[in-house]
Amino acid sequence: MSNYLKIYVMKKCIKNSLVLLMLFISLLGHSNEFREVNKDIEREITNLFLKDVEQGSLLRIIDDNGLVLFKEANLKGGDYSKGFDLTLLPDGSYYFELQSVAKLEVIPFDVLTNKVSFNKAEKQTIYIPKLILKGKKVYISQRSVDSKPLKCAIYYDENDDLVLEETLKGKQYMRRTYDFSISEKGTYTIVFKSEGRVFTKKIEI
Image (cartoon, rainbow, N blue to C red):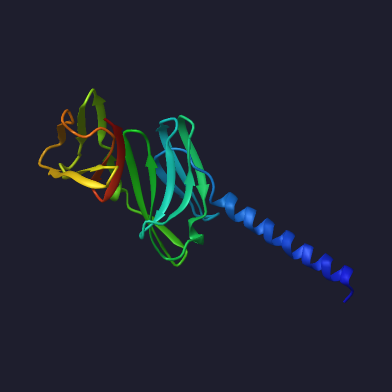
């Protein structure tokens, strides 16, 4: 085979590989809001429809080990619709996660022998802890649908010292005030753990 022919064949293979890659990306690439999931059996495409998506929200597909397989940030506000070929995923458990400023919407699904199944009863809403800094006081609040506990840990960034750690529980709406009036000046990191999720916020005192 001549060098010219070898180069032509090589370019042809690379081009075909890129086409297949772009096709795969396009199938795993549409997102919009959250409320109802329908499956188009003919095309084996799962259509994700999300209603009233908050502008700037983040949509992800995550596997059972916490690995992010797909991410689309800064969604436009309003209804969102996108098709995904989830049958391309290996057998296992996954979930769609839509994150806005105030909450996470979680829809789990399973893939088994190229079949995708959703259980609407397992759909979950997790409210993100809210933090307000006024002067040297920090006001924390969180709504919990099932009164799940909220773990709080405060670290002083300069030396990574753990300043405070406690668990709030037993209420659907939890509030706590932390007074930093006599604390060292600097940056503090507050780590929240709620319903298997970790949220981190920084404050400057």
